[in-house]
Image (cartoon, rainbow, N blue to C red; front, side, top):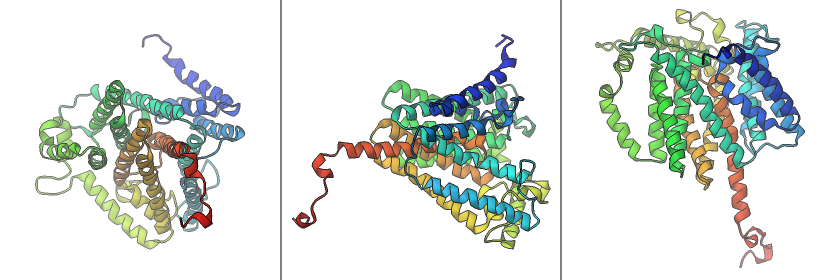
Length: 442
């Protein structure tokens, strides 16, 4: 901005974390959650916290939010997701030791052990979910969470678009791609943008006020524009599948538009995007280098899975092995789950994902409040994008990509409880009174 104050922004943000820790522990944990949301995806800022405990500020704040909520006597809304996360987290730590026993990884004892750090970072997601579920207690909090989601994503949009537009894209160039504020790879940024672009599209469907509806559709357009210039084919497929789901669930006209786009996309998208999509196969049907690389990696992963199919080779062990082109990831999260945690881990993940989808569907069917109905539809379309994006790499275990998703999961679970409670309160008193057994036959 030309003020010369930009150098102090990380320090102010870092001090703000400590202030919010104190506020969270002394009776205002919701404020702590609010403050954390823009920083979840914006790892570039968090990486500039060069002061004591700077790299752990997000973990410290989320723990303070949970402790502050428990001190205040707040309760979790009913959901099977808490138990599933507990079972999964314990199993994953047990799986770390399986990897050690099989000599695939070091003993997971402390922060100096990379496999333990991987597990610890992953466990931030259920902590965020618990924190959100505890402190989001009413309609106002749900509304504020959606607003903060929009603000958080807009900050990422702004930085991503500014970076993309600073480069010439007359033709596709892999070297120009960047991970943006997430400080990850460009494909991870693309997954983030795709799922939240679709969240805003779904959310806007039931908004009654025209200005609010247009604002969320505007966020959809900006976020999907940013997605387009990440040049991630996986993200493109995730968006297309989410649009298809949105058409099936809410607006059948989208199915017609979806079909037309599939036939005309080459005339609509920029040349660089068309080049990126078309380079998947050569004119004679041969896969290009990166696509063939993934196929080879998946074939190798299949062999690894069958060497220990029940419990896998140990969580977070794939990064230590020798693989195709020295890659450290399977480029498919589902394959990674099966290789590292086996059929047991795969079944837990399947149940976990099923319960997440179920939470959105239950709210969508039950809600009459436009805010809750919009949240449910946005959540469903966001999950659709997330599930597809993970077919092309690990877009699941990162706080930067899915931290806000789990905040919205907490909001969805709470909104369903509020909806059911309100419906029960509106029933006539007589209809809620139990009928005596000897009169039931009448």
